[in-house]
Length: 340
Ligand SMILES: CC(C)(COP(=O)(O)OP(=O)(O)OC[C@H]1O[C@@H](n2cnc3c(N)ncnc32)[C@H](O)[C@@H]1OP(=O)(O)O)[C@@H](O)C(=O)NCCC(=O)NCCS
Image (cartoon, rainbow, N blue to C red; front, side, top):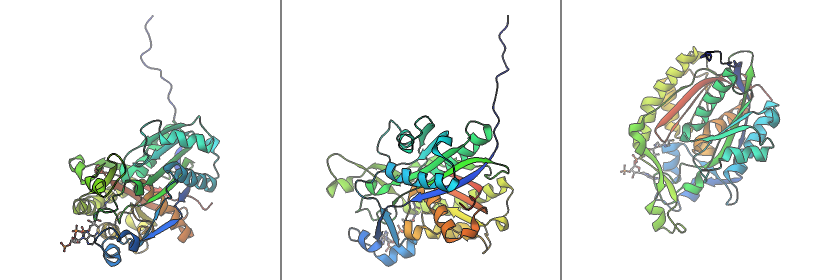
C-alpha cells in the first residue's frame, strides 16, 4: 500500500481587523529641562530638531510586563474580547531583559490565559507593525481567531543619560491591539523589509561612555545611533515604503483618514507626509511631542491617543508604518477600531 503524499487538511480563516486598542504610559513625565541636565543641549534645540517636549519614564520597579499588562487589559476591554478568547499573543520589545522564557509567556500567565500561543519578536521600532502583519495572516489563514499584539519598551533602562545623540529621544510605554474576525478586510497587505547593510546605524551594545560615568557593575548595554544616517534613510526610504503600502491596499492618499507613523522625529513625520502628498484632510499622529520615541510601543500609543483626541476617526482608514534598528520596516493600511 502506498502512503498518500497529499490530503493534508488545511484551515482557512476569515477577514480580520483591529477590534480594540489600548495604551499605557508611566506616571512620571520628564521634561526636556531634566534631560539636558546631563547633556550639552537645550529645550529649544530638542523641540526644534525632534518635536519632543516631554516623555514618560517608568518607575524603577515598573517593568516591561507591568506596562504590557496595563495596555493589553485596556485593549481587551475596548475590543470587548475576553482573554480566554485570545489564542495567540505576539509581544514586540527590545527592552525585556531576559532571553527566556519569553515576556509573552509571562504576560499570558498574568492575563489569565496561560494556554495561549505566545512569543516575542524583535524588530525594534518596527516590531508592532511586524506583529500586526503576522496577526492578520494568522486570522486570515485560520491559525488563530483572536490575536493580542503588544509593543512595549522600557528604554530608560537602556539609555545613557550622558549620550548627546540619544538621551533626549527615547522613552517608556506600551500599546496593544486585539485583532480578530471581520466581515470585510480591515487590514491590508503588509509591506515590510530590511536594509541590513545599515545594521550599525542603531545599536544596543555596551556603552563605554555610560561605564565611565558610573554604570553599576558590569557593562550594561545602551542604545546608540548614527542620527543623521537614520534620519536620511527614514526620509528617503519610508515615504516610498508608505506609498507601496497604500498601493498594495488599493487605497489612495485622499481615501485615508489618518497617518500613524513611528514616532521618531516630527521632522521625519512631516517630510513623509509631504513626500506622499497626503492631503490636509488626513489627520497625522504627532504624539512624539509628549511621548518621545517609545520604539515598538510608539505606533499603538499614538493610535490610542489619536482616537481619544479625534473620536470621529474610529472605523476610518489609517496608514501605519514602523521602522528602526536593523534597519527594518513594516507598514499596512488598517481600518481603525470601532468606538468602544
Ligand atoms: C538625533 C537627531 C535629532 C540629531 O539631529 P541632527 O540635526 O541630525 O543633528 P546633527 O548631529 O547633524 O548635529 C547638528 C548640530 O547640533 C548639535 N547637536 C547634536 N546633538 C545635540 C544635542 N543633543 N543638543 C544640542 N545640540 C546638539 C551638533 O553638535 C551640531 O552642531 P554644529 O552644527 O555646531 O556642528 C536627528 O539626527 C534624528 O532625529 N535622527 C533620526 C534618529 C531616529 O529617528 N532614531 C530612531 C529611529 S527608530
